[in-house]
Image (cartoon, rainbow, N blue to C red):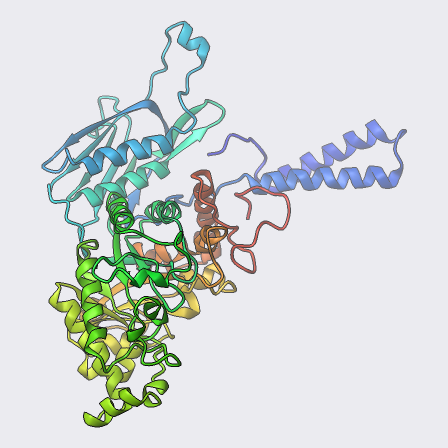
Length: 570
């Protein structure tokens, strides 16, 4: 698949190396010391070996990430016209989402520009291409993007030679979002050949039937610990689409900063780091709409009652006292008025049906040491644990009243599972074995085991991310169906604009394939042979598309390369 022609077996390499040694020896024996000549020969042999191993792709593997559900391929090479045109059909074919995506992917595929030379232009000679049209058929005109939207698609690519029943390249999908996934796969099949200066599709004809394994495939982005400009958030959303992730969990607010505008309570964003590190309502709209065009939902989070010290910078009455700044004041109705105001304003921005209410790491000690809160507890015969439950359940009711399904971190389930609202989605993070308990009680679960899927844990290698299984320990089909999927979490205590992409990628891609591809297809065999070369290749694809994905196998994630070498070498 690559233009460099080198021997690919040990005997040929040995023969070439021996010939080179003899040639160098005869040429330089009289002018070079034996030691220097020996070093030169060794370096030359190593260079040949390095080139051979660095530039060989295993043609038995499929270099589409994540791996499609069902596919077959051939042994033909097809050329793709740089003037590739779009032909749409079906009730949803005229969607602007499709047209915008086609233009976006066309720029990616043909970033090298026209493939015929200026001399051919002067002679009015235009090469013939095998693929000159991409047909996209979308059956539904609905553009609603919610959890469980149909993302399946079919992709067929063959030469239009009058014999094939396929019209060159065809994507068929029930929804525009399935068509987006098909466009991503098509773009990964297209490779620029530097020898012919043309885009080619190898191993054609392709027949792909694809759909995701899980409906929820997320990435958490923390903009409280470090502010991220909206241009950076958009870059991250764009890169998510390359791996077919479909939920951005926007952890907007935490104890360190409150950066988003809330019109109903305009002093809240006085809790931002500075007046330059904020998101207006218009910024949030822009992010949500940008994500929708890529088939990605945005799930917002306000973490209550803990992780909320920044709220009191604008409204100090939300603090139980000056020395007890979190959890928020459970004894005041004003606290819940503010929560209701925030959710009312956010409901106008975030159409996704899920809303994350946090509920983790709540230390209630200072409630007991704050006089008016202590009196409130005594009047109602409540313990601080009871008050924690009261706060979470009241916040849930507010969210549900505004049409949201509440998501809470697992501590709420661990502490008072029997009292949670039955619509609650439990978000696992502390460790393994939680989702089995959650679904056994009839709740839905999102898997984010911090031992594997917390991206700020820089010492977790790619293979542990890849092999983490959301359905581990769940064997009953009806309970497996309650696991919505999973999410990798990019907490930002030690990440900002300077390093966030290389912390996310490529390890997030390992989780993305786990969440998209069939379990049996990616869980058998030696993943060092079946997955690692493909992940290296996908990391290089991300780099080519301008995503600062770090090397796959560094001991610590996001470290730069340790020396010269090809992006593709293992």
